[in-house]
Amino acid sequence: MDLTAPPMRAVGIRTQFGPNVIHEDLDFTVNQGEIVGLVGGSGSGKSVLMNTMLGLKEPEGGRVEYFGRDRNDLSLDIRRSINNKMGVLFQGGALFSSMTVRENIMVPMRENTDISLNLMRELADMKIHMVGLPPESAVLYPSDLSGGMKKRAGLARALALDPKLLFLDEPTAGLDPVGANAFDELILGLREAMDLTVLMVTHDLDSLYHICDRIAVLVDKHIPIADKLAIVGQYDHPWVREYFGGPRSRAALAASGLNSRETG
Image (cartoon, rainbow, N blue to C red; front, side):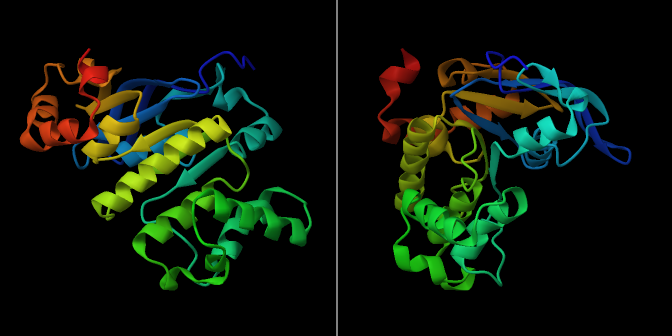
C-alpha cells in the first residue's frame, strides 16, 4: 500500500438501482489533508457516492482505491484496518435513540477494539470534549439534545476510533447560521488537530466558501470538475451557473470574507 498515494479514489464508477443508473464513468480523487465539498442537485447521487466510497455499497462497475490499491484486492484484515480509519457523520446524526451520548460514542469501540469498558468511557468523554459538548451531555439521550448538539454528538461518534478519513453528509443542514458557522469552525480545528482528510456532502454555500479546499460537482451522472472555487464557479454547465452565480451564492461569498483568496 502506497501511503503517498491519495487516500481515496474512485475510478470509472458505475452505480445503479435496477434500471436506474445513478453514476456512469465517474472519476473522483480525495487528496491527503484536504476538505472536499461534494455538491450536486437533489437526486444526483451524492450520498450514494459517499456510501460507495465508504464500502457500504458495491459499485456495478469501476473500482474504489485506498492509498493506490483496489479495495477488492485488499485482504479482509487490511480492509478492516482501513475501515477503522474512516469516520462517518450521517444526516441528522443517526444516533441510537435508546443510548446515551456516551454509549453512542462507545459503539465503534465495542465493535472494533478490545479495550476495557472504563477506558472506553474515558475516551468517549474525551471525544465529547473535543466536539465542544458540555460534560453533562454524556448521560443525555438524543431526545434531550438540540439539533446542533445531535450533530456534535454524531461527530464525536465518528471520531471515536481516531479516523484519518472523515465523511460528513449534510453536516450543517437544519442548523441556524450561527450554529452552522460554529460547526464549520469545529471541522477546521479538528482537521488541523487530527490531520484529517474530509469529504463533505453539502448544499451549504457558506460551508463551501468557508472551509473547502476543493469543490467537486456531481452532474449528469459523473464529476466533470473538482477544483478550487474560482475555477469551479466558471465551469460552463447550467446547474453550475445557477448554483454558483445566483444571489445566494454571491451573498455567501461576500459574507465569507474570502473574496481575495478565492478570486485571486
